[in-house]
Length: 232
Ligand code: ADP
Ligand code: ADP
Picture 1 (spheres, rainbow, N blue to C red):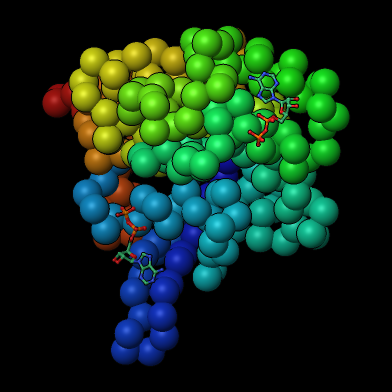
Picture 2: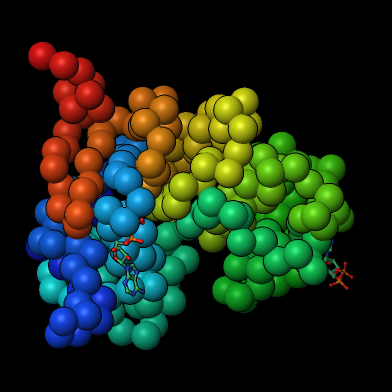
């Protein structure tokens, strides 16, 4: 479960201050696919960055499974990072490394031995349908294949939460569909809670259980996708 309690994020100070988020209260239940939709500048990235520990709220708290992310020790930061996978619009792969090494990176960083690591990477590549691409470099792959590598890397440490930052915005409709299908499979098979930020209504309608509409740093509406987007 992910909880936002009165989360405010302010960048800058005094007359330059920008309130990216103003008192966000939201709960994402375990096992849900939860979408946050809003235009550019709404505060979506700021919200997700407060979950993956890249930002700290200026005020308020974020909890994962009841643990307050705003007051973690260094050791807890490391273990919490492993519990949170993230995928990105532009994939964020290392172009100088093979697919194998991109997926192995988080395992290497968390101290896996070579044999165990190779086995796990093979399993992950199999799961995302890229078992024959291990020795290729990102430049040799299509956008959809790159995102599959991103997904394999994000799942490497067995996270309970997957954050998706405009993960299909750089992909064509057909590829978007196949990535959304894969996300649904991850949610079902591994019981991973998925938080998606997007400006695309199609993504919300296609796979989200719940949605929050964000505008100027506040939640305008939230609830089931059906309730929020079906006219009375
Ligand atoms: P979104 O992801 O919905 O586009 P962001 O969270 O990126 O929204 O941005 C929300 C607001 O905060 C915008 O006005 C943006 O310009 C501002 N903002 C985001 N990051 C920073 C930053 N590092 N420094 C200053 N302002 C920022
Ligand atoms: P680099 O390309 O960085 O020089 P290598 O390709 O030599 O690294 O790989 C280093 C180690 O990573 C290998 O000894 C092997 O254990 C593992 N490895 C790399 N690619 C694969 C792969 N496709 N399948 C299994 N293990 C691999």
